[in-house]
Length: 121
Image: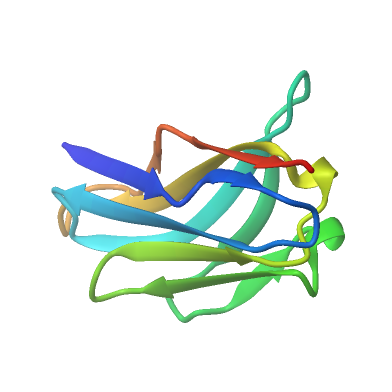
């Protein structure tokens, strides 16, 4: 079994910062892509940022220059540093990992349980 556990969400004022963390644990042989998604109220889940095992990152346009995605491979952990937060960033944020449980297993997709981020004055 694999678990992805997020932390760091909460309420922040516009212009503020938050740092999300997501630690993967369990039967893990290798993690490829890790990512953050978010689901605003009443909307579909959307991709926010990705980071490869080689630390290559990509971001959706609306967060470029404000969010930084990084990972610690030794800790199987992915981070999302969010700055200059706007009310439209309010959403449930989910972490994602594509990983192998063993040498011979295929890559499988795993999701965290989600953490709420609310940007409001």
